Length: 378
Image (cartoon, rainbow, N blue to C red; front, side, top):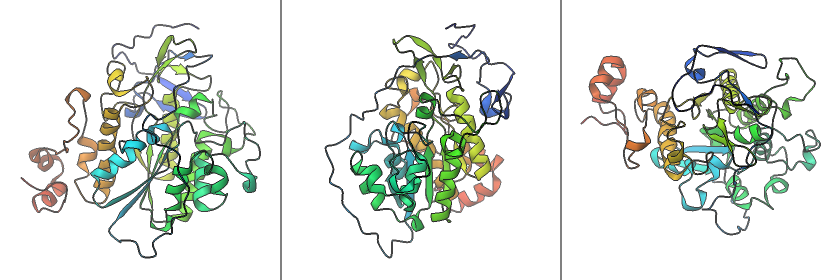
């Protein structure tokens, strides 16, 4: 293993073009500027601890009847993901709960499971055997919610709390699905798509690929929740070590032999573009200053977000539904950038009215008229 000419302590990104399977990603694009041509292929990576220290004791599974006439003004939000969504569930500091606290009239369901992937695992047998399905990947979770597979077989034994949560969801009432995966697919070397790393087509079923499983799962959710909107959350930037704990590099240069974690974020962007969903960037530090020089403040183990990191991401993610629903100007979604050294968890972002007037005149008119319940004029 060779470390070749990579300086992580400064911004020395260069103009370059990366080819990720069959797609061409121009590094001059805002979402790809940090991809480095100095790639380190890691034989093994240190496995993070997937256990959530805030998780509670054993849970008894209950069948919760769905309300026939739910409150119409409740905004129902369902989160799928791995440990980045699951962590903090035990004490209410998980990202879904924190997002819900910033969105008016929100009802939040957290279906995050630590250690899970988006794609059906190649170690599993029978991706078409729905009767005996047990994989809790994203695709499997959408099958559980839709009733295509038996959710009790998938969740009852190992994740009864998640099963209880799922039993409360009426898909016909869901307004938003938030989908966050990528790190575990990277660790398990999930193929990015049906092409091999050189761009040659394979006979691999789409269910075993990152792109295919995300796309198929979203299609399932669109079928059972035709009114829902979707938000794709990139895997979060991180630092990586080998199996002996030695530092290797970050999400832009450490490859699993298929691609870097940034490549998985790019593939998620392809899914979002093809499916017409919203995107939240947790990789390319366009929303906050999570990078090599701040990662110890954001990340508790070089991979998983700290509570402060989760609170920062929750504030930024909440701008998406708040803007779409008209609770605040949509300009807030693009204008809010957080530096962790200056972050106040009790603070609510407000754009300077003069800036809003100059650049977003239509939103400024609504602002001064008091149309935004989260951005009343001062």
